[in-house]
Length: 115
Image (cartoon, rainbow, N blue to C red; front, top):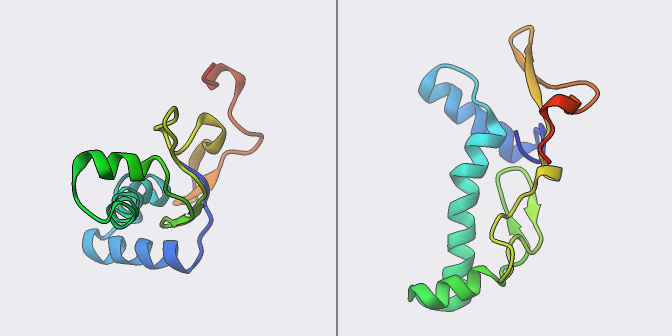
């Protein structure tokens, strides 16, 4: 899971494409953030750098802002000291209920928290 079961138009369209291709519902936030959002970060960095030079792209990546991901708008996802884009505070636990993914009630159980 990531920043949400926020099923907006973008995530709904993505989910429907995956269902059509593979015949089952995806874990949308995971799939989207690992694939689609990564490409959007690279696209923004290449555009910001004005080239594909790896050093220029790296530096631009550390300065990108307002990158629209599959389900969220990333505001300053990276910096020179932070290359993670999301933190543990952006995550939550989900589980299957009657064939659908739902946010786990009450947050992440203490025994599962990452410290």
